[in-house]
Length: 113
Length: 115
Image 1 (cartoon, one colour):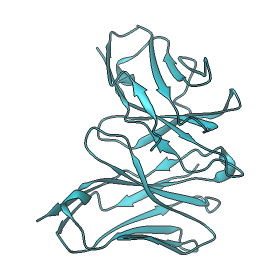
Image 2 (spheres, rainbow over the protein chains, first blue to last red; image 1 turned 180 degrees about the vertical axis):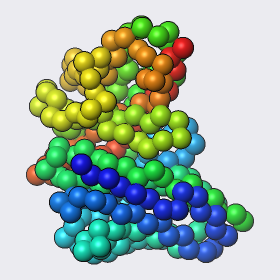
Image 3 (tube, one colour; image 1 turned 180 degrees about the horizontal axis):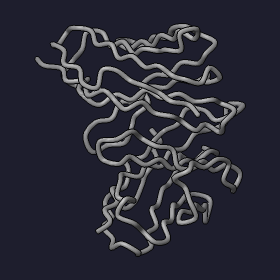
């Protein structure tokens, strides 16, 4: 089955700097890659996703890149703000598999003022 | 903005007891899911549900687990005889149809504590 690895496990950045989180996946058939943000005591919130027919997608300060050949994808957060502090999860899915998401282990991002 | 809701937010139960976790998915969504997250570990897929039947389930989802959509709005997860290792955060999610499952939106979770 699919296995998703995520690095780093913790990331501390100064406000205004960029943060990058990387994930690798094992199943070359996976074709949908969402990113979720989880704040303390809340459920995962979808922040951006990418499908395998594109290499990059951007939404304001957040971008995701996908390298299908290398089987890795990354989340980029620019101009970080204290409210970006949270746990971020990557996930991978095969859309033919009824949407089952395989999650990475998560990255605790701390943005210091 | 529509959201997935879950009740209760925290459930404490004794080992061997039955529990039912409840979810109200987003109203026009057609795919429903349960995931769980043991403290400090990954979010794990349990089961997906479409057209009133289970479409996929993980190895975790054994005979002790069942799901039901008892009416047009609720989606429930039942654990028949809870074990200590069932203690976790349980998340419900739903997605609409985009020629297949679309983006999944998660509820706030139910923290299940088995003593």
